[in-house]
Length: 273
Image (cartoon, rainbow, N blue to C red):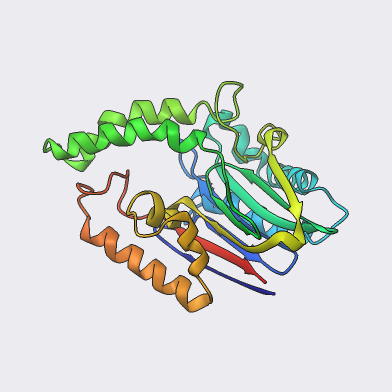
């Protein structure tokens, strides 16, 4: 059994959190709220994802605790610690994070996810990918509009301003009945946690990525999902991320590969037999 992972900052602060061992591992990809940061020097998404991640490293080690309960305890602790800061904001302004996790439970491997950090599971007879496609589908139309404005000669600042209203509207559907489910300082998203179990002896490899790393698949088309299974050690993760950064710099004006910003935090976690 081998587990290795890597994370690389693409924002002003790294808002991803990644951890893994033989029995469980996860990625949290933080998303800042729409309000001002409430801790100097750190984005609210970084505060949230790193606090929750540190809690889960301990909580998920207890194999008798359900994953949903571990998440509930972690977000409750966060909400208590930052009660004053959160109380000044409406819930749509709170930070949030994706959560994608593998966890060995008895003879089974449990996969859990909230949001769009893909879990690619290589099983003995097939490959499966687990993530919530709602968020990227919601964003795709706005990304397309943003990209067309850039191609017409609009400045990046003007193009961002033109689509901001729609971006805010999307974010405001967070953890609403008709919106997308995500991890935030409330229990609402956890109630919609997606899960799948398979026999552990059928699992050959697991690759979890943040959407920033998954750009190599869905934006730059450098890998197919199946080719994510080629990563064999820590060094291959670093090399892939270095290649991603090179591609991002080459398209710094965002004219060739549609996306909102040049770089994003990129994280990857690999479990293999």
